[in-house]
Amino acid sequence: MSEHTESLHFIEQIVEADLDAGFSAGKLRFRFPPEPNGYLHIGHVKAIALNFNLGQRFNAPVNLRFDDTNPAKESIEYVNAIKSDIQWLGYQWAEERYASDYFDQLFAWAQELISKGLAYVDSQSSEDMAIQKGTPTQAGTNSPFRDTDSETNMKLFQEMADGKHEEGSLVLRAKIDMASPNMLFRDPVIYRILKKAHHRTGSTWCIYPMYDWTHGESDYIEGISHSLCTLEFKPHRDLYEWFLSNLTPLDHHYPKQREFARLNLSYTVTSKRKLAKLIEMNVVSGWDDPRMPTISGLRRRGYTPQSLRNFVETAGISKRENIIDASLLEFCVREDLNTKASRVMAVLNPVKLVIINYPEGATEMLEAENNPEDPSKGSRLMPFSKNLFIERDDFKEEANRKYFRLTLGKEVRLKNGYIIEGQSVIKDVEGTITEIHCTYDPDSKSGSGSEASQRKVKGTIHWVNQATAVAAQVNLYDRLFSDESPDRHKEQDFTDFINEDSFKQITAQVEPSLVNLTPGTNVQFQRLGYFVTDTDSTSDNLIFNKTVGLRDTWAKKGSN
Image (cartoon, rainbow, N blue to C red; front, side, top):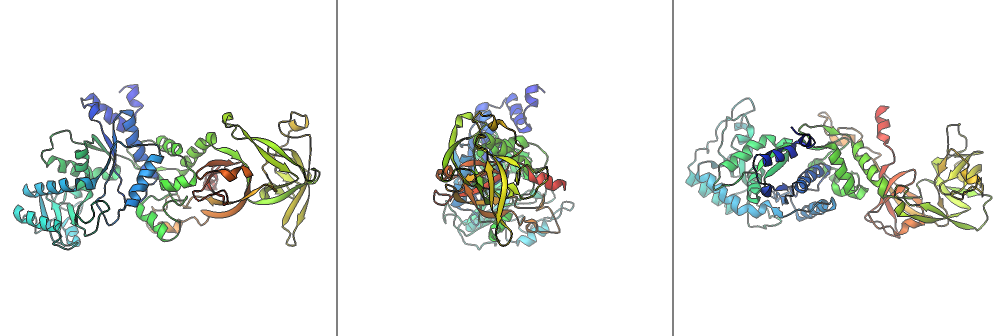
């Protein structure tokens, strides 16, 4: 194996091996095939990136195909959300396809199986059929309808399509092997009656094909060369190939199904059913709640396309299931935003600070660098005066030597401003501090070059000017679950592990430059973390969502 090959993940190695064996590079084609029955989540990012990155690597087209075979659960809302998410991630498909495009062909191919004696109509209940399938160690028993003649089966199947039978009364089953060690080979259902309108075909059909029947044939029709699925579909591969091998005239290259490990993220559930339950229980506000692992939720939380792509690339493509720590995802967004997000001042839990020796009524403009990691982002001017807000947590009336923020009789620097020293406090009748008084050294202004400005102090705190500060709603989000594997406990429901502290809403004071930020703008609240303007944020009603803190606080929790 060459050094070049060793640097590829195993799916890339499979494609390279096929090319080396003579497969034409011009016939490479990949696809991402979601079912439009919910919103895409972080696990889908891996599958999306895998297929589209292969397309880019091998200069091959990638289709977006919606496996829309269950009108009871699918809608155009989900179709549009999926398309929006993929484009937001930075990918563009070659062709937009739908399994429903192939309903006529799939019906004709099902008739072909019937004519070959490889499919039959069964009127048993689903419970009876399940019993007849046997167990992994015990062979199944044949359906009493298994040997019905092809003519009768063809007539019944046509009646199913014509709406002459009720839902649940008949199904079409493939006739394969009731003794197969692969349970999926034990005469699987390939069509069922569903008298529900389809979001694309309307009421044209009242029978719909099952996934296993639809998927391989759709891949074949589109000329997909490599059909990439997650590991739970590995037992389906033999069935995928059986359907293709028993149809004519399938005379060109069959698509090759290969499997990779799905992305499992700690402190997260990704089952659409479970995510829908969280919405139904009002645990979250919807599919785009910033605590949800959906792409739309992550986007609203402030995650960037690049951070998600970097995350799945770092997690890698493997053959073995494992759980990726959520801290890796958080690291990736911190790393990306560090170079992109402007540094701004915001005080989340404000207390008044009065500089008693600062000139009354005076205001000056202090220069602040927008992003020290990117000088091209320039700087801005911030108003500064006698009356400021600072974080309540940045002051202690009495503190030990290891406390490096503001306290009485000790100095700290105001970020981009002056060195101050705490002098006294004012309290309300309950003993809560309402105002902190301090003095400042007028010669210590940051960047002035004076000797006083270069004096070293151990603490620097952030602030905003009271007179020009803008009130903003800040949504503080944390992980939705307190347990690393909330859906892997047999004795408890995953909802038992919901983190009650995953959401808190506060009113903060922010610098005036933030008023004109458009929704979806990432910023760093200095010393606090990364935040993003919410989709509902306006200049008259600023709303920020916390993306992630500057440090991994969960690592400390786990070590306690």
